[in-house]
Image 1 (tube, rainbow, N blue to C red):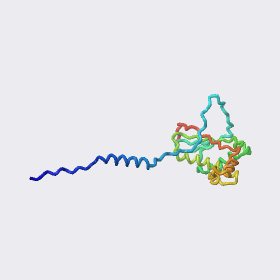
Image 2: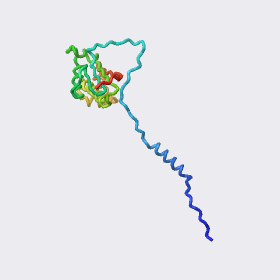
Image 3: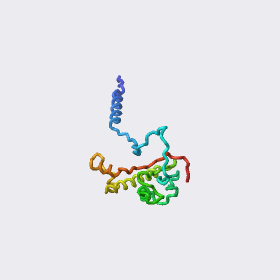
Image 4: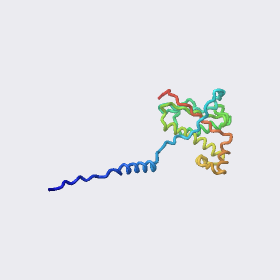
Length: 186
């Protein structure tokens, strides 16, 4: 008479421990990507008692982008490349009261950038880059550097920090980014 063999069993008791250890391993070693966003310094919250400041229309360089990414500069359709905005912006800011249609001085010059809710991020970022490039070129030229050299100044080094402060002294970067409208437009 043959004896029945018992079916072989796999001991699965430690499988839960192994799965738990693998889970812990992946949680500890995995890097979770996070969006860094656009580094912008937001203005402080408006005070209710703050007086309404009127700017001379002459000192405002207006840029508007609609939902179809069409650009208006100073209320005229921009037909050139976005990069061609740099010389016009520099001419506007560095006018020093020579042309009565342009800003009075770099201190009073304000670049007003407004978009529509449908504006693409690509166009938005390109225009912000152009605005920053124009200001970096102006700052760099004040201390004998290129825009790239000025942008790469290491502010932890006292010599670079002194150059940075000298370039920006009495020369604010007045870029006003308005809240997007929902006007649409093609």
